[in-house]
Image (cartoon, rainbow, N blue to C red):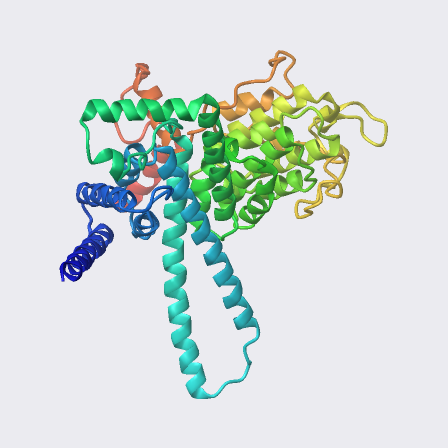
Length: 500
């Protein structure tokens, strides 16, 4: 009958719809051209709207939206253009934004649960296995590595998406992507649709819009916290920590919950550790985090390798910021000053000028550590400036991680006296400020000369000599040997003997 024909047509249409969805999602993941990816995403999102319009009234979003979200986040290299197109065209609608975040949070929790189950199975495995079982384990390891790689791609993409959404200020609580319904969208022109939209906004009201936006903010915060339950790839840690201060922390309802993530980030080492300390520092000063290991960890990061790394400008800025606190104890300030001066003996001029400026500023802000440059010897003699000979061997223990036990307060900054004979005039000037009565009374600027290195010093010296006039006092020689010098006497004795 006619009913069977209608049902067959419906089944065929739904089948074609599903095939189209699969083809677009596959093309989205395999396409390198960002413009083609954006076109696929645009088509898929409008198919989500079609599916939602054909659903019963009251359905909040399209079931297809979750598949589209996972399809985009599963792309190995998501282009910035695709994310911006997704964010500005579709995620600015409050209903799409909330539904997308909910889908991402559910997937992150599912991955976390799966990883826990896999770890439990690994822990319960038998240590000694037959050969066939070992081969199976090798295959399982390969599958596990592939799964970890896919998870790393997904986590990095989620991170990029959340950063874009956190930066997006265009989310409109009154804007709905799925607001129209077949009963209202199938008839009437633009005027009728605009009238119904205005009616919808009036029904929603200001209070309803605020409540909806509050739901969005809470969902964004929950999704961030769900992401930080996972171990990110190393580049993901760097990306997240760089955006932590300006983008992520303002979107977290309880920033103190990020403590475990930041503490785990510190253990990675290098620039990641330093960026993690910046996040911990913000939690300490703004959210009352009690973390007594903060400055010991910063002390351990003060190494020649970190001070001369490519990210040293960020390192210099943060160390200078952390050591500005007027409430640090004397032994701690002395330990930092001593370690910096010891590193200066092996560092390049850029590191030395910054380190000496920082130590000088620390002493101006904290006069209690000025004893490191002038103190009365134990025998009661005259005041000694930067002279360890009056005290014997240096008591400072460079390898001691505990600042209270490294004996920096019992030492002297004799390294500064050594640096006063440095080949760089800038270093000499800064080193002599510590004992010069005409030295600046206020903290000095630390950002200048950070880029000084051997090549820049060489170029500066060449430019300086190029502008100098050559010496004009010169007496030309009439012969190879001049009467009265040793070479002339030598020839006078050798040449006659050779002639005979």
